[in-house]
Image (cartoon, rainbow, N blue to C red):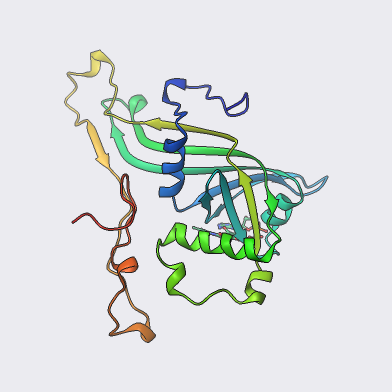
Length: 224
Ligand SMILES: Cc1cc2nc3c(=O)[nH]c(=O)nc-3n(C[C@H](O)[C@H](O)[C@H](O)COP(=O)(O)OP(=O)(O)OC[C@H]3O[C@@H](n4cnc5c(N)ncnc54)[C@H](O)[C@@H]3O)c2cc1C
């Protein structure tokens, strides 16, 4: 953590535990990647949602070489990557004290491109594994032309911060006699039944698909 990643508001909600940061990044599915794009006079901020994966102390991003964000990022523009997990709506007795329980991580830095083909394949497999653990061994290896047609960036987690809110509403004492309902509405990832495409109809759904899950403390497998 440094001056850029130091929390200003409610610093008591900061989490410095590296494993806590890894757990949020491993549970999340979507990162919002921001940078300052464009050239004078059209310089402007942009934030784009993307898939990502954590690999040790690094983050991986990928996409088309035509992606404006990736082109800017690999050209040396600093990026800011945010991953947010929503755990609950927090309903208080006043609008002011409504809140959300969340875990979020902000990573800043300058990404670099992975160009070595083997390292690129490993990174692409890691992106698949992040999203669906166990999947990369169940699908054909990437073709060379697919690897060439994909840009992969890697970003250090050196500069990052994590913030967490847990617990119920924090109402003013004067409001505790108010008749309004207060408490938590827990939120999570909804997982529907897997829907086979036409080519897979009748095949048993493999375990890595049937038991896919996402949530606090879950690796891959629905509870029960
Ligand atoms: C959940 C999710 C995961 C994704 N994962 C990836 C990924 O891993 N890699 C990847 O390359 N792309 C991913 N995308 C798509 C990504 O958000 C961009 O749309 C894509 O990279 C196209 O970039 P571009 O260079 O064509 O667009 P840009 O040239 O960067 O954008 C041009 C304009 O298009 C609009 N725009 C672009 N993307 C979006 C969007 N998603 N929603 C609304 N408006 C948009 C904006 O107004 C932007 O200014 C993901 C999208 C979602 C929602």
